[in-house]
Length: 311
Image 1 (cartoon, rainbow, N blue to C red):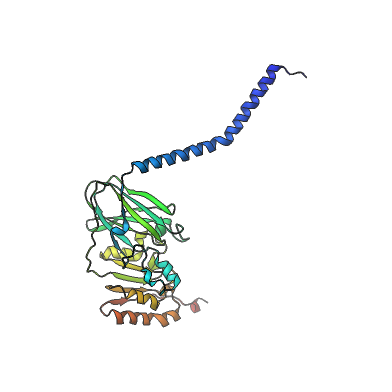
Image 2: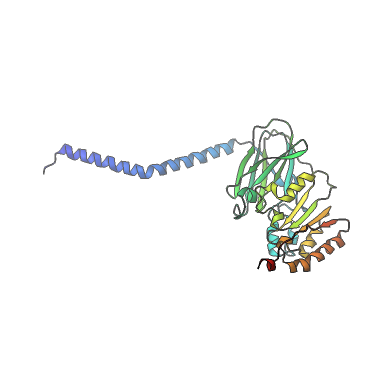
């Protein structure tokens, strides 16, 4: 069968069109994705270049919830690393209960924070484990505003914007179950900011306990129970809760007595075997009272069924 030249050209044109369509079907989504990535990166670059936000190192603000002046967000100073069990030391690097207070009339607040590890344990929200909580003082009471929601190890977010020009008192709580490598707060460069410490003669309340104290399963950083008590009493609290490791240990007691506290609250019973309580609890309380005779020590009473009653 003889095919005319015009029909061959038509078939060739159709073949080219079909191949082009197939090629575009394969490459077009990828081209669009590349273009969107480029556009996003370009916009971020332009925003960064045009962003005049003044970022303030969180360590330069009034820091509460830790009793040492090291340039980190650990609850214990590094000098205690070799004196504590490794599990307790590692957990002490979680920033649970640590917060910063500051005042500003900036129309917006931003935050940058770098995390050490994954965003959340299995039984917690990412916000509670690795996020930030912003509170503002209103009528002498701290009220929740919003949270910094982590989505990666290095985070940068606008916490709030569109505020008026009045000076406001803010508080930011750090993550409950992660190690913070750095934190900075962003404000308008033309705005006023101040961060004086409160009553420096007031002694903090120290809580030593388990995951319940540290904030296990709390939805947000400001919702660990020691932090709630801190806001109710308007008093600094130092959270020494160690998930799975509240065992009435003398080594922790030796660390605690370095803190000139108004009261020690020892809430380790949920982690401790009855024999551990019998062997350690009273000795720890005596140790604390002998060292700091003016400081009250309180051990909440918790009643649990032993395994013998469940078998």
